[in-house]
Image 1 (cartoon, rainbow, N blue to C red):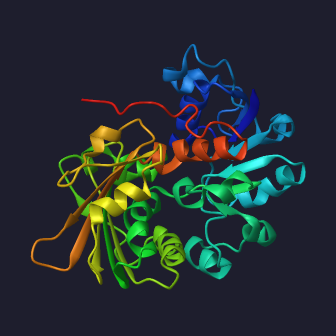
Image 2: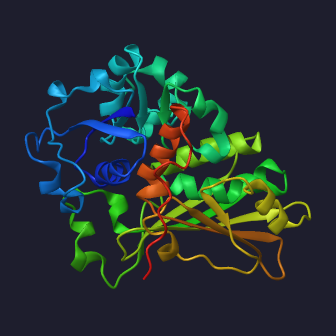
Image 3: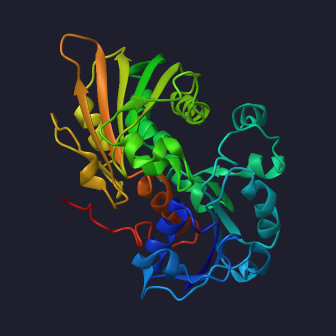
Length: 342
């Protein structure tokens, strides 16, 4: 069994890590930290875990993280870059679910996150944790930066087209929708039921923190800088990401065959039959991303639809997928859950 610790276990990504790891065939949870809930049994805060763990939250300073094989950081931005280097120096592998190590340009990081990066050496060594596009590097990594939920869906939708050179990289559009859990568990008027229910709105149109991450990674896939319009929306559902991605074709190809061949051996990506329209509810609770590719009638536009659970493939499930690769385990271990319907 591999010994696992979690720093920051009270948020939605933290409890999702717990839910997955409690049922993982090769993982032993050793410590989970929380300054606000220290001493409280985990199952008291999250009753869905009753009977699955007897751990209590502990102060970070008291956590037995030194004995772990791998530690997850499910923390706000700024925490991992301050605390992870000490663990890495001990030979402990780290998967960070925040944005601390996702961006290569630390000036861009400072611009979007309002803080100077305190671990630039590790930022340069970090591996971006999207297995479908970066598997070999993840397998040999000590520090993995798990992608955000929007970036995962958009990259899986557009990367095959960019890598094949079939679309204009300067003319990309990602029109995305997220469930309310994407905003986290903190008190927020905008996430109250009465504010969200029976409503639908765009946000971050003039600039969203995931924009530089998506642009960075799509530029790598394309081999050239990309031009991207990214518009996120908030929908009245708890979980889910739906990304409708548009690109202008510059060459003819069998698009369905391209996507099927690209993801043929990917256990966590499902390319649906031609003409399909994937639904967020079909992936709720699972680590699957479902894709469907369309050619817009009478135009040179390709439209790719991508759906995922923002807390699983968009966060904690993907982080566990990276953990499996980093520790030499079956990539799908602990991630075989089927989407919840209805």
